[in-house]
Image (cartoon, rainbow, N blue to C red; front, side, top):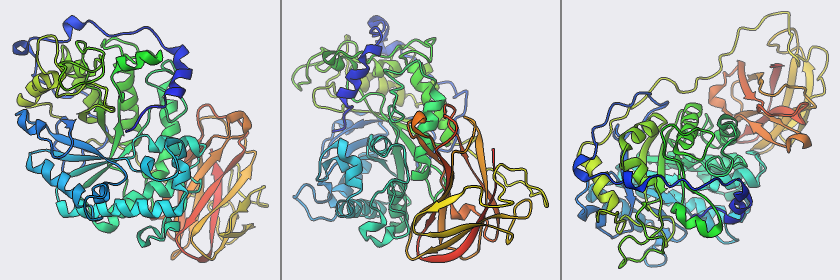
Length: 590
C-alpha cells in the first residue's frame, strides 16, 4: 500500500510543533443533538462537478470485494473504493487476463447502491524496485507496454460497466515523477515507444506518460470514467501540511501545477484533461507516527492560522489548487481513528483498536457542518475514509467513548439527513491568453529578431536550422524562422541562454504554424541555472489551441523566486510523425 517516505519525514521532524489533539470531550456530541442541518456553500469553488456525479458532498469508505459491511450498515454511503494493484487484471492468477475481476467490483458496488472508485496503484508492483524507481520503470518500454495494456483493459471493462466510475491514478506517483525528473516534464518516459497504437502520437516524455491515460480512455470510448490525478503535498520539495507550515502556499502550488499542466491538467493533444484532483490528508492515523518521533496532528480551530499545522492551512491549499487548476477535489484514504481509539494495532476482536486521530471528528463531530462547508468551498466534492495500512483504525471497529461506531453513527446521521448540496459549476475557471493585434512596422520586444537570431539556437533532431527571416512577422519586419525536418515523431527545442527575465514575470511568445503541420503541441519553458537548483517550468499548449496559418500567443510564468538570468528560455516543439516545414517565432517579451 501507499506510504509516506518516513526517512524523508524524519529529517524534517525538527520542524514539528506541539501535539494538537483538541478537546476530546467536545468531539463526540450526543446523537440526538448532532447538527446535521447544512447551510449553502457560501463561496462557490472553481470548475464543475464531473458529469455523472451528484451536486452534493459525497461520503464513501474503503471496502474489499465481496464484503458487504457498507450495505449492511444501512447508511446511504455514496462511494465504495479499493486499490487495484499489479495482478488485478487476472485476479492475481485466479481468472482470465481480461479484467473481469475489476468489472465485477464495479458491478458489485453499483448493485449495492454505491459509485465504484478505484485507486489504480500498479507501478509500485511492476518489476524493478519500489517507489524510488518510479521514473526508471516509466522509462522501460517493456514494462510500460504491459502496464498501459492493463490500463486499456480497465477502460474496456469500465466502458462495458457503463455507469460513472472514479479512477484515481497512482497515489503519489506524479509527485515521484516530479522529484525524480528534476521538475522536467520533457524527461524521457516510454509512451509511443511501447508500440501500442493508441499511444503512437504521444511524446516519449513524462508529460506523455501523464497523457497516456487520457488517450487510452478516449481511444476505448470510456466516457463514463472520471479520471483523477493525485496531488502530493510534498511534491514541490516542501511538505506543506506537516513540516513546511510557515511557507507561503501559492508558490508551492504553482511549482507543482506548472509541472503537472503538460501531464494532463492543462490543454493538450488528447483534447481532454483530468477530471478531478485527488489528495489524502494523511495515510495513517496521526498517533501512529509518534513512534517515529513525528507530530501529525492538525489544529481543528476555525481561527487557526494558515501558517500553522492546521485544517485551515490544508483547506487553503486545496482552495488555491482549485482556483489555479479549475478542478474539484476528491479526498480519499482519510484516517478513521478518533480520540477514543486505543493506540494499538487494529484487531477485529478488540473494540476501538487502532490509533488516535481527529479527522473523522473534524468533519462529523462538533462544528462538523462548518468544516464540511469550508472544504466544499475549497473545491472538495468527496470525502472517502479508509485505512492506508493494516494497523490503523477501521470504520468496522471505530468505537468512540459513547460506545458508537463513529463513522456509521455520525456520518450516517449526516447522510440520512440529506447531506450537503454544493454548486455544480462556476465561471472562475482559467481562460486562454488572448493574442493582441500586431503592430506593423515596429517590434519593441526583447527578442524581435529584426537583425539576426539574437543568440537563439536549436537542439534535437526535428529542427534543422533557425534564421532571421522576412517571410513572416508578428511585428516589425522579421521573425525567427524554425525549419523542421524530422523523420519521425519526437520533440526538439529552440532556445536562448542567459535571458534576463525578472522573477514572477509572464513571458509571451508569438508563434505562427502552417496549416497541415504535424505539430501536436508547443511548450514555452524557462529553466533556471545552478543558483536556482536547475528548476524547470513549462506550460503545455496543444496544437488544437493554435491558429493554423496565423499568429498565436503562448505564455509561461517565471517562478516568483526565480534567479535571473535564466539558464535557458525557449519553446519545446512536439510532432506525431515525420514533417518538413517552417514555423515562425516572434516578439518574445515579458
